[in-house]
Length: 111
Image 1 (spheres, one colour):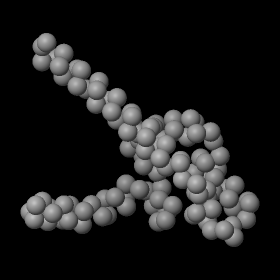
Image 2 (tube, one colour; image 1 turned 60 degrees about the vertical axis):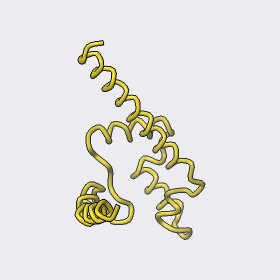
Image 3 (tube, one colour; image 1 turned 135 degrees about the vertical axis):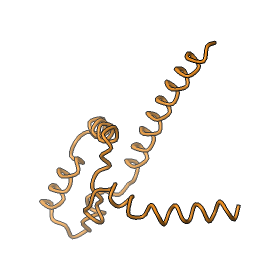
Image 4 (cartoon, one colour; image 1 turned 120 degrees about the horizontal axis):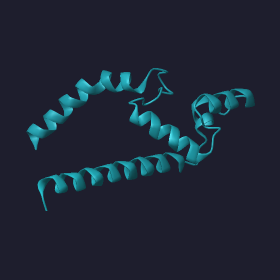
């Protein structure tokens, strides 16, 4: 087996693993028994507020349609908007990345 064939097989395997991980991640997030709209807005939210939230976050669509939107956004680097901070998730990740890196380095030094 040549190196090119080996590399191609590895790349195809990586793509398969990434697709599998994205499907599992999506499925786990949908196994929660709590309605995300109620969890975000509270028990006293009106039906109109819940419907607006579901439409805004695409929760009113079928699960396969939600997954396709999720996968498309992931491929484009769009991780969405945080429900808690109302900012892009990438912005929140970048804000806390230095502290995460510091903790990882400290753990690496201790280990």
